[in-house]
Amino acid sequence: MIASIYYYFYFFEIIFLISSVFIKNKAVNKVALTMCLILLGKWMINFNKCAFVYLECKARKIKAKDSFIHNLLHNVVELNKSRYKYFLYISVIMILLLNFDNLWYKKKVIKKIYLHCVNCLK
Image 1 (cartoon, rainbow, N blue to C red):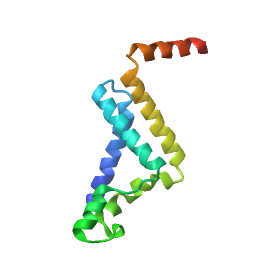
Image 2: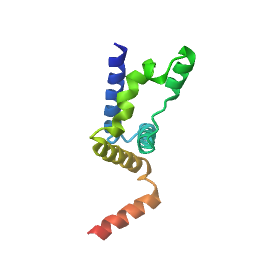
Image 3: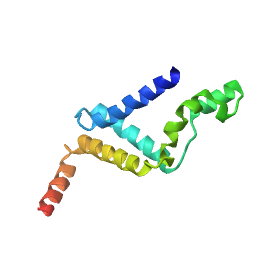
């Protein structure tokens, strides 16, 4: 039961990241930007440790492999080792860039650079 709750949580997290691209709210874009940076950071440096797993292991005096939280989140954290990892990297980078664009496009300097690049491509 609890495992399915976590999978629903991650499903809604993915829906949130995808939909954040179309939302022009700065708070939503900042949260999505932060989530993308955390995901990419953890995947790129292959950091598969979790503070909650560590706390559970210390509190229950068990190994990480026996931890309830570790067993729930292991498949999600190990996505960087799946055969779809490059698709995931590209997708998260695209969401990151689009959210960055939603946040900073209104700045005059970025807008000038963007318009200059568009004019150069024509």
